[in-house]
Length: 133
Image (cartoon, rainbow, N blue to C red; front, top):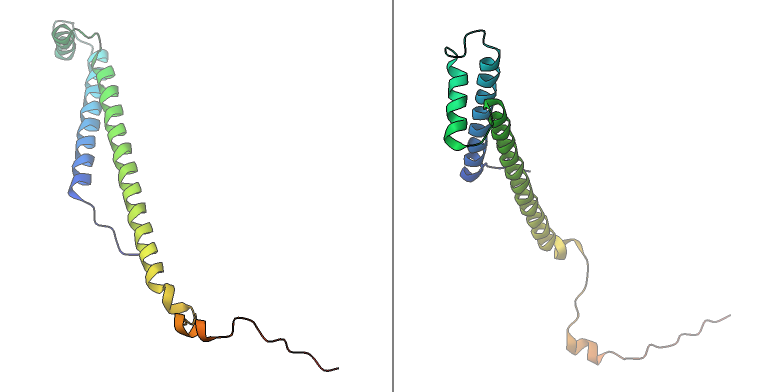
């Protein structure tokens, strides 16, 4: 079987999924660092950014939860892309196999094709041959 060429759409979807996963991992790391940073709350720039984000979008999630959601979104995009392209590849393989079977159908068999005129000229009732004992 020949090697399959990856399409531009497939690469684009993998890049988008990778961006979401990397953004999610970055947010999770910043959330963990901000949570465990041993400085005063006024000096903790990561906690200040989390509080600003919560006040801006009115959703009470910290960076770790946002990171998990972005990682899950990237994983879902990757799974959908893999599933779609696997089905597309299977359809192409099946189509190639069916075409090859159609091309080879007449070559391997030794079927003799008779014309309709010749069939009509033949005796429709078979002769009975008696065995001699």
